[in-house]
Image 1 (cartoon, rainbow, N blue to C red):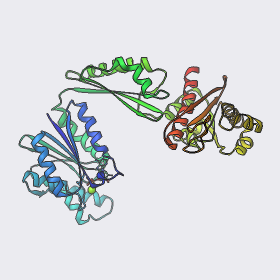
Image 2 (image 1 turned 60 degrees about the horizontal axis):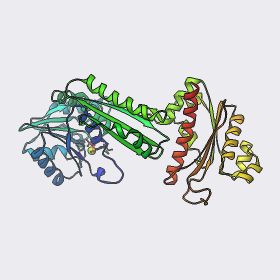
Image 3 (image 1 turned 30 degrees about the vertical axis):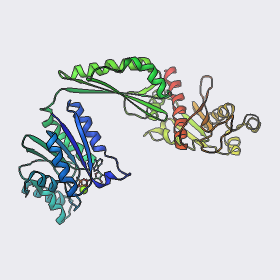
Image 4 (image 1 turned 180 degrees about the vertical axis):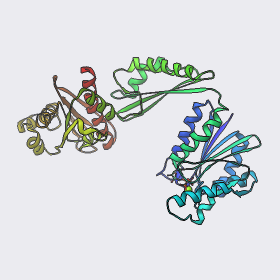
Length: 413
Ligand code: ATP
Ligand code: MG
């Protein structure tokens, strides 16, 4: 079985939109052990789309198309499919009635362009769309299967799960399983060095590493021709070997961002936190409050950018700033103590640094950030140089601060 994906949409050829539908489809096909051999992105023009379909049908036996099934003039996928296969577009009364009812339920009259969605390539099976108006289509032609799916991701996913997955499952070559490990605090080369011996040597087990500033994710994908359990066991084995080499840098085995994990730990421990930030400009407080229910543990946050604000709001001694400089371990620690006592919280995080790209000096370079965590135990303090653009430095500093809190909460648990 050779599968191809064609993502249709001129917006996907601009810098603004990403073709996430193909990523979803590739993941689901991987689960079935059906490899995707080619993926094409093509604009909404008949003269581009017809030859794209035509060439895919010469190579593949399964072609999945996303987008261009809507009511507007730029939605040409049905028409292109009909032309490429030399078939007619025919009105499907059942779809038309369904559309009319859908509009009537909302007290609206259906407009003429919506009728377009009731036309199908002759011979196609209609795949109902419970999330929207444009149904998907399943077409078989000379042993090749074509699947047309609506573009909006929640619609594509619904039609796929409801109708396409069950049909493809009959063609499955086996079973897939995936595991994920999210780490922070290690560099890509640290990770590489620790896990070098664990890289799988078979096609049925794969390890992919995705590094971004402040975070490295490890993705394990396994495949079994025989059973789902075998695939799962294989993935679990590799994931736990990797974990053995990377603990305690692993903060999640799900897609959750670090703030969600910190939130769970704070809630479980019944502890609260307050923040005093300089160079992150409130990013740390923003991330802590991105989690629903954060009022249970987040007390307050200060953005004390100016020295005077650090002195006034947090009680950082003026002499300390003069002696050590605003970007120093001593000031980060004083900020952490200050915010903890002012907020009456269990933990206080203090953070001061140089986000860049200007403002660095030879002994205090751009990217240098001091972070301190005051809590029930002794103060924890770290100074680090983060690389990257201004936003990367800010993110990494907030990530490190959250991680100090995570580690403190995990070790006291
Ligand atoms: P509609 O009825 O909404 O017009 P459609 O099937 O015609 O649906 P498109 O017009 O191609 O789909 O796309 C609708 C929207 O879906 C796009 O504006 C875009 O936001 C999203 N979309 C389309 N294709 C993709 C894709 N490959 N990946 C992610 N999002 C997509
Ligand atoms: Mg459209």
